[in-house]
Length: 341
Image (cartoon, rainbow, N blue to C red; front, top):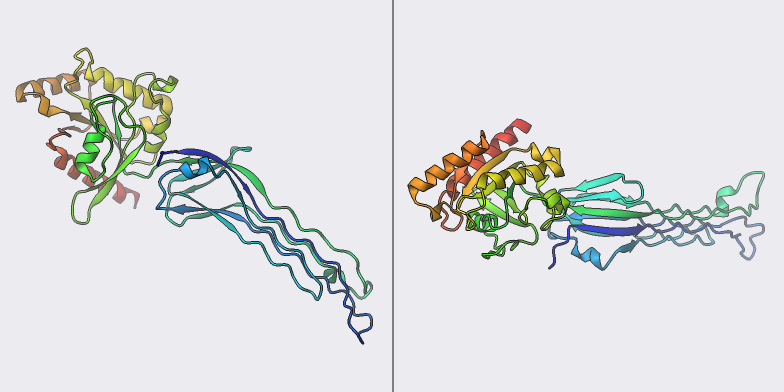
């Protein structure tokens, strides 16, 4: 299924049924009086988070959702049937805005989260409601109110603990496949990853975290170069970023330090909050270098960057260093969880 992380839909709640104008007419019952019933309420439209969904692709076709209207009242003081609510299922992590006002309506993060996004109309009053001691035969009724209609913008931000950053071909997809059961597309050409991938990394029998891989960024992404920065929104919910850098690029003119700085600059252009998020440097493809050259390139890279944060050396292709990286990530996430509590 094609991955889609943005959609615009229209939701229309049901109208309320009209009140009934009716008088009791039965044999041997003189002046029976009013017996017009109320109209039923219109159904509302709800958004419901569903953990089994992982894309907004369904909304490329179905864009309008309407709840059932209430039925009108009837004689014998019968109230019209209320309209049924309509539930629209969306992936967990969906952020909903009103297109016309820009208002943030809700952020559905947990399976089963519900939010009413269009209120059904109220049913009208039948003429029985207007009976009084001075008005024995009222002919007044009210009409049902129309249901609410809104244009909504849906934006999916995947839920993950750790996000992967790096240039195309830095080895992000290979790393997530080495550390989890995820099977993203892996090839020896740039932009192999075209949409975010999620993988569950199991560190111990009862310890695990979710890792997200997004398409590679290049310098100038904020101006539309490459795949752009539209997928960076999927890293906004993470608690830790892993910045992968290829220590042995095939193109020797590429300076690994320059590539790290370029990605950091694109993060800042997208979101200051994302740029300030904890970021670890992960030096990848160490299997392509002998031990002495590996150490020399590492020291040169850290010196050029003046890097002060955690640094890890891995080979996503062979799995070297990935177990230690997973353990360190798990410990860090547990510390962050304790701080929140």
